[in-house]
Length: 351
Image (cartoon, rainbow, N blue to C red; front, side, top):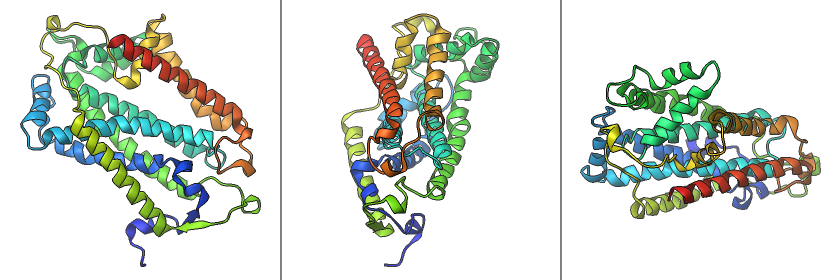
């Protein structure tokens, strides 16, 4: 078979053992597929979305209820965004639990972590663009957290929300804020994410592809061709697309009444699910410590794993749970359990 463009962007062959789904979990390829879905569905939504405080929520309702297949497209966009955060988290866990961050892959690990953060921020900015009562308190509380940062807080707050306080609405609910979030979503975050995705994929090839022991230490030298790899990727995409379509049919994306007047808004602060763990910590005390400092410390610990924690042994690469990097596995597991537990507590408290 003569290779086409899609074959040429893959290596000629890769190790058979490390190409199995139970090793990779298909997380990297699934993330790329979800990004493509988000780009296509988001581009379609732009034809009808109106980024003004008066019409944003109404235009979302128009997309959901009046545009042919608009509700389905919006559901695809929403669920692809949620699944992307989950898949990125799974990919991070897989990389750490298999020791695939060791040199020369340390820098690429940081690129992947940066992409994870960008995926969360893109999800949050897209969440805000609904501009309905469901996002009100999350937006106000989230932006006000910036004010708690010493020295730079007020500057960052004004930089994010833009403009001056409106006469009726809170500063974070002004037209300038919506415009800024729309620009961040489409340009300020999306362009860096696209650049880092390309760089991340380039580094995967440059760093030698899948992490595995040196040739002299391998016990299994069986490999699969790029044709088989592409076939598996297409199958994974079809399965992912089927699951995404089913979810989008039976679980509509949330939608609420437009934000009009602050007097009409009430209820407990509710963050999007991926920030519920932070919201839960805010109940423990100082907003800066629990809402800004602790999440940054968690991010810093994750970033330092390839540089500070014990290096995985070469003969243990290419398999799950190598003993040589057990400390990194324990630290990540504790962080993951804490975040999941706080998210569940926050979800139960808000329900």
